[in-house]
Image 1: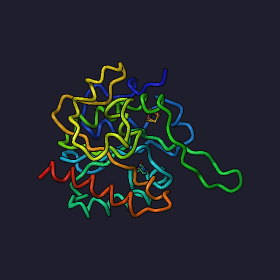
Image 2: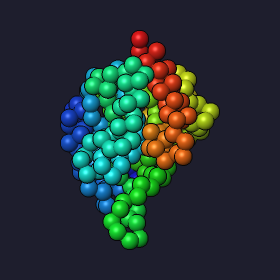
Image 3: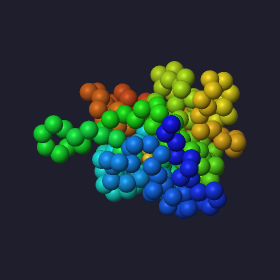
Image 4: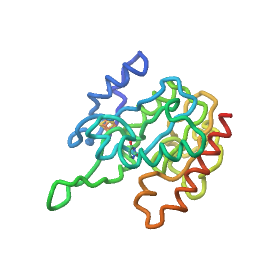
Length: 219
Ligand code: URA
Ligand code: SF4
């Protein structure tokens, strides 16, 4: 059974959790990645953005959303009237999962499994509790499932304000990382998926319009 729980500190704030996460071996993903990429940003943010997992650049630099997907996300945040410097950025899974291209050394992103996401969820739950944001943006399916449970679907659930507590009320036994704070989740597309799309314009406009929903809830 993969599980990060034994690696979480019993007490302490965000800094203590970030330190402890450095040594997490709750699932096999720590073996090949450079290191844990814990959340970063404003520790008392009203807005939290949750991605899937760090990418190549994030793994090298040890910070979330510093690569191309992060660049696109920050541009979309500005367009939606949200201040990136006030936000907290993190991922559902804290280690980079990849395969190495047959020739050369290029590391290609691989989606994390449900088991890996579930193993890593205690870190996300701790971040939710400690940052206690008012609005959480779930970027893509992995983040959506981590926050709202496995029946979450981006196509069905995106762009609406979903009370975080609903994640606990789904009754499917494997609840999301929802915490007791009153807050909302807004689900949207993952910026990395937009970068991979042939036509980026339509999904990018969708990302901005979903982020405007989050901005409206914070206003
Ligand atoms: N994609 C993510 O989901 N998270 C990052 O930090 C970077 C890219
Ligand atoms: Fe721990 Fe998460 Fe990394 Fe797995 S992905 S080793 S659970 S921090």
